[in-house]
Amino acid sequence: MAESTAQPEVTARESLRRVLANKDLRRVQLAFLGSGMGDWAYGTAVTVWAYSVGGATAVGIFSAVRFVTIAVAAPLGAVVADRVPRKAFMMATDAIRAVLVAVAATSMGLGGPPMVVYVLAVVAGMVGAPFRSAQAGLIPRLVSRPEELTSSNAVAANLENVIGFAGPALGALLVGTVNVEAALWFNVATFVWSLALVAAITVPPAAATAADAAGSGADTDETDEDDETFLQELTAGFTTIGRDRDLRMVCGLAGAQGFVWGTLTVYMVIVSVTMLDAGAAGVGYLNAVLGVGAVVGGVVILTRTAKSRLAGDMAIGVIGWALPLLLMAAVPGPVTAVAALALIGLMDPWVNVGLDTIPQRIVHDRVLSRVFAAVDSAMVAAVAAGAAVAPLLIAWLGFRPSLAVVGGVVAAYTLSTLPRVRRLDARLAEPAHLPLLREVAVLAPLAPPTLEALAHRCEPMRAEAGVVVVREGDVSDRFYVIVSGRVEVTQGDRVLRVEERGDVFGEIGLLRDVPRTATVTALETTELLALDRAAFLEAVGGGAAGSAEARVVAEDLVSRRLGV
Image (cartoon, rainbow, N blue to C red; front, side, top):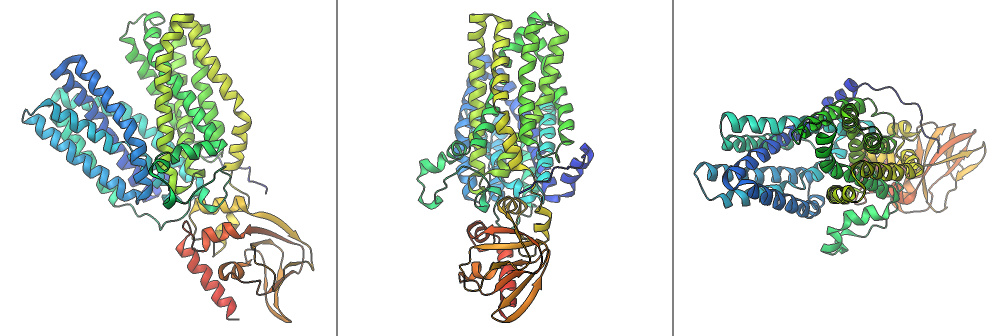
């Protein structure tokens, strides 16, 4: 089926307006901003406190334990997030973390054992680990159009940049001007803030996401969730990625970026010493350059939310992480170093928006949180691998050759994915007839991702004048939407009605599971969209992922037509 190609130019202000105009998206983003700021302030404060209590060793051990347990807890928690209402899950994690951090702040203020604070901080991190995955699974239910989903993720990428800057600064300010406990109580307040905002969200009735509509293109072989073992549930995110070539590519691009990120944790120290002549302290300046570049990149990506090039933008972003390494290897110097780090920061949101949005567009709702957790785990592993490999490459090849190797390998891998990138963007492009389907009463109640998936499944047909499209008594196997032209519906020798653009037929046999109840004949050249039985029934017929409201509308239509 032909796909739309013309996309309106979208400004950063328009993308932001789309998100702010949706009160539920606005609440999610404000909840994320508040709790994220609190988390960063809390992390900074606890790190400072740990240093004062046990020195660098305590900081190192605490940080290692905290991050390892978070990495383990994220996929475990995502299983629960996919099993229960995500809104309730997010509220529960906010409430539990607020209590844990409040107890830690109280213990710290009363001079309790340091181990109490350490344990509570680790547990709070574990409880919060799947929160982001649950949020990512909830957001597709709150949007009305695919570009609104992309805009939401672009805004989130910008907020994440703000949080990364302002959170640690606020934590340091609270520690310096008040005390460590003040930062912890601030974090408690942000969890309460997040809880209140999430509680106010109105979540539409359960409906399918893009992959739920039976065949959005994913190479999957889903099994009944009730028949899965715990191990299968735990690994469902990884299994889903493994079965879908597009998801594997997205995960690979994310891993490529993560690998460069890991090497940069080592390279930036050497860049600061050898290119900036600023010593190890110059790493702070380089991180600031990265941050400024990310803020600018976030604004730029807001203007691309309507272009339907999520995979292409993601590939550009990864290339933008690799080429600066080649630049620093070829032309070392302070100007090059600053320009390279600024470019890497600029490209970061290009990767992140695709990484968030693509799974939301193509992954089955029942495993969406677990897929996000799996991708996060893969990225953490890639970052760790990069940090481990960088010193070995430097020792083996030298600093500049190691930059060239990492940049060259990542760039070559990304270029090799371009054919798949183009196919994925075609898969994500809005089908040409989606606006028409939005006007069809039976389909209008469906969630936007579901409707988009159905549009992709529709098969265009042409019936010349006099051609019988369906015949009374035949097997009911398809649902039809009239794009243009007219058809006559007859039962025996009786003419029941004439239908035209936007009208539908074929629903009675599918919903009642009976042979065709009437004959439909084209009165003139007629363009149709045909939707196969399985996809229609899954979305409209009351399947596990179907829309109850769409079923009611469809049954009302059937009742009226059978009453003729």
